[in-house]
Length: 91
Image (cartoon, rainbow, N blue to C red; front, side, top):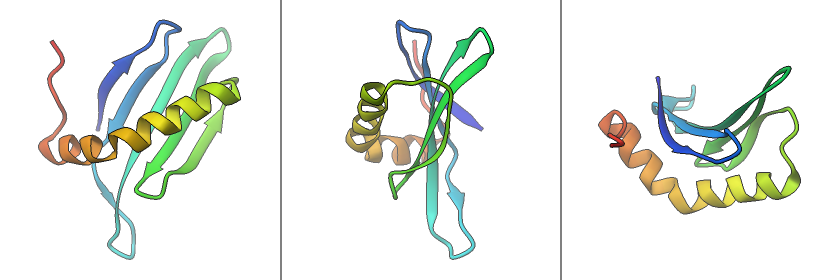
């Protein structure tokens, strides 16, 4: 399951996943930024806690990707907290 945390003026939506577990027991979360295009979606997915980009598809600019990484770094504890709580309510 994913939980929306942001909508941007260009149509990008930010969501975070439930906490998953790797084979070694390490917990992870995927933070996805996605916007619709004429041919599908631009997609950028960052994994926490490694900050590794696990999926990049489409035409996000380098500046946008840097901004997304900064958002994920600044919000890492937020994402883990609310993934544990089952999401958050946005009015």
